Length: 423
Image 1 (cartoon, rainbow, N blue to C red):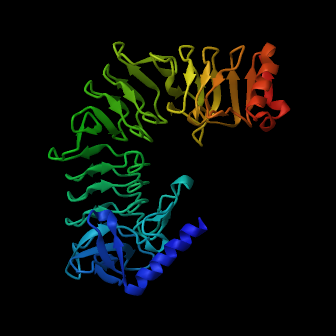
Image 2: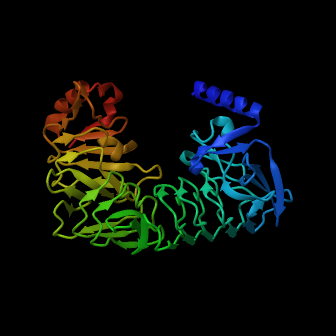
Image 3: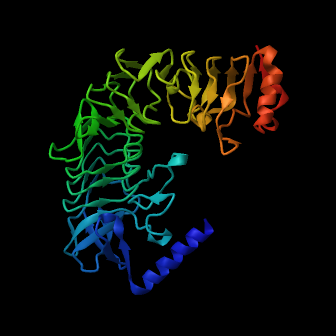
């Protein structure tokens, strides 16, 4: 990590000597002057770099004209020193120009998703309306994160990419018009923590996506990309064959109806914490529902677990737990299970299965089988792990068998005597 930061600083210093640096994320590489230009519009002051040919400008910082002010409207200038505004986003070049774990929003506030820091500040706390420049082609990561009062936004048609966390924490956002030329969309996090987002529109001329039935899907109507967050019931059209990872992440959906042609539920495709029921057409050739589980009919592997009150009882139709499944429903605050009940039918544990079905130190894990499941091996090593630092329940007659199982996987030392229980 130190080497990465040091290299970034060295590169920045070399570019600074020349007075220029580049931004390749805008398609064709644009060379930006390091010099800062400012312009005041409305109640804000905008800070920008100009391209070397002075035809384009990049707004990298926005500040209220008056200190401690909380304006209600933000209108970006169309031009800075006669150069069209084509890029908006914090200047992160000192850390390697975009190759960072954390970013700042356009208001110069750090955003740390892992810790729930969305970039909220006095400057952006009351902005209800925002107007973006028509020539805009690039919006950087995090840019508008934390604008908790924003209610609607129209993204200019020349923007092609919407990155993760761009509108993270915009809790009052209700309406979004996506750009006509959108070709890449971070469905997982772009509009994360936007629970009121109810209306999403997209030009029919878009070549890659279409919006219909409360979802964003591929142009051929075969892949579900993203479910509009506020919708509580989603009926997946029969044309859909694939549901992408992150499609329901942090959505408000409670009930999902899957058609008979959905045959590819990607890992992490159904992860909403509000989900209560998932139904599948009985004619579906791949998937079926039993209790709290969706399972694969062919190999009896768990595909989706639907937790209730942070508890998941695996169906006895399930024989395999793998790292490609999804977990949804009501979980603990840290998105974990307090109870995981594994039936005797489960005879195989695959790599990362325990990451899909995470438990904490407050959890209870039941293994119902008289003999432990087989654990996936790769290259002579066990590729799967087992729950530790939690209460483990096993059949009374099999206690020594399970303890030896843990010893075989070098995990017994991670358990305490009082954590072992029998039934």
